[in-house]
Length: 97
Image (cartoon, rainbow, N blue to C red; front, side, top):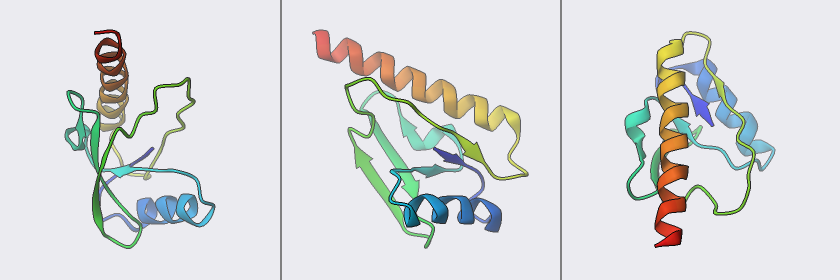
């Protein structure tokens, strides 16, 4: 997970590193890009293309790495982490219903 402003060159390079290494990554600027109810995410590629991905959090156990641009406020990072946790919790509830 890459967190930072869509106009940030620094953050763009972080996404580019992930893409070049074929590491699944999602660049968001705010937690609002994560739809916690429907397991969707609206994210940006390093080339500026906005994409929406459904079922972006796999059901199995996973490890999430998070990095951010240098000027990204801590609160934005915290909100993104909270959205990830909420998405995961809701996905587990949907799976058991």
